[in-house]
Image (cartoon, each protein chain N blue to C red):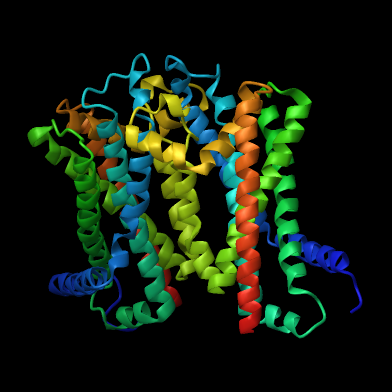
Length: 266
Length: 259
């Protein structure tokens, strides 16, 4: 595999983007010709319905002061969950491509294999846009207020960072293991990170071990800031974007390491 | 093969339990995941115990029914998937060529599910007590909780058997898992029904039999011996068992006629 022109880093700039474009186009085509592409939205939608519907009364706990209400409070978590799971599902697709032998052929043909990674990330963003829109539409239909105005772009930016980070994490695992049995290894850590955050009440109302874990969880910074954007009261914006960007950079290195491992074994 | 029905059933129950215990991933996930979700939910929603009118002092006690019901659900999926594998691998077809009665397979498998429910019930009670759950109904209540859990496991397990016998596909049984999950969350699992503010959600929770199973178990933990939720809970569990066991038996007859 290492003998061709396709070794990572040796391709031309144009080759990098043409590979990325081809992979992204194939993935997007696959998504939109199979209704299962909306699967990452199902769990978030379900949790949104279950938590926003069943736990509204939690907003009456003394100290709960999220102005737009409990439905909006839960919507932000569900939206970020939908885009994160979109990344996880892209990881499953990559693992499936390796299992079917498609990824090996793709690596043989690619002039710059890093473009493969970018292609999957671009496709994941497209998918997350669709699933995120679905979750938003359902939330609006259930009466969620949108008071953020132009600040909502901040929320969208954070959702994109979460999606890209989750995609790169899933891609790294999928490329290292190259089997669909990697599914739980991709899904479980993402679920844990999502749930070990202030899901039901703000951080200030948590106590005990969950408060410590949520405080240390980098996703909490992003979630809190994203909720601020929806409320029209941006808070901790710089730190949230810094955490998001740091995660993307670190996980991009992780995904490139996975790609390198896949190259060696191919 | 002159064994009586009960001997056949016990042999198949033993096979079912041994097969489950030989899959550490299944055993660990059926114990670990419900406990993990309980840990996260009970800590994350601890503030809910400060809602005016909340029926318990601690959300940890209130939410203890969650892992019990969720574990029964895991057992149902495991049992259904195992039975589906028996169909996929032709075990059921080969069994139909022997004097062994097919009903023994179903009963044996369900006994295996009940045994798993017993193990889960005891483990969860031990973990719950270690983490500070206080069972108001005392030791008798704990025994009743384990019995309750075995009944719920039998009800859900029979549901898994119906799916397996109707579809003959392990994948189909596994894919039903989210539906069971939805049934649990759209109940009074997280808050008492009178504290659910959204009318539509309260209506669904009231119509959902899982609410009564949860409330029956929960009453032993947070209220002691309260006859109403206990009667409703046990009534629901027995009704669920009657319906699903009858459904599984009918599905088995259809499957055997086809094979």
